[in-house]
Image 1: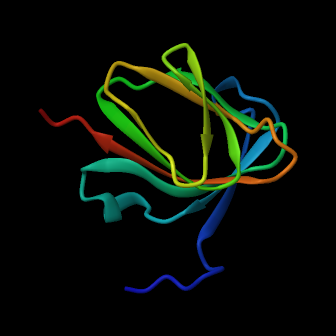
Image 2: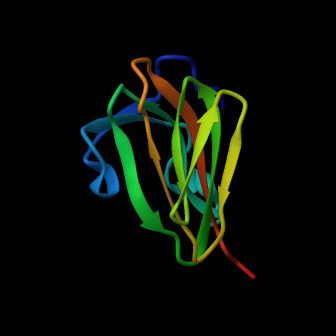
Image 3: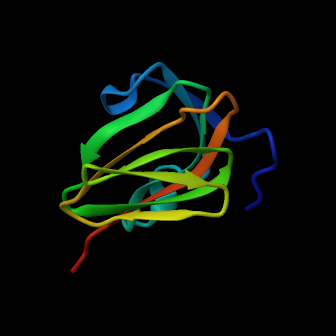
Length: 117
């Protein structure tokens, strides 16, 4: 199967996880495509002054790959600057969030896998 550019389902997430304003996800995989191994694989666009609020992952982990722009990543309460090329990992039982504090769009790939240990 090939999903052509511009054909991915786009979802607006208002105040995601208690964050600021709206962020926008292009769904790379959906439903059965995960083969029960995860639940999210998206491109996510953060307009200026928007965020994914701090949240904890139980029974799953999440990885972000920063593709474009820069922002502030909350790594279990520690704020770290991130920019294009950086990769973040939030292990099961840990928490994170991401804020676009710039005047340019921040774009990431986000992947959530289930903890099957």
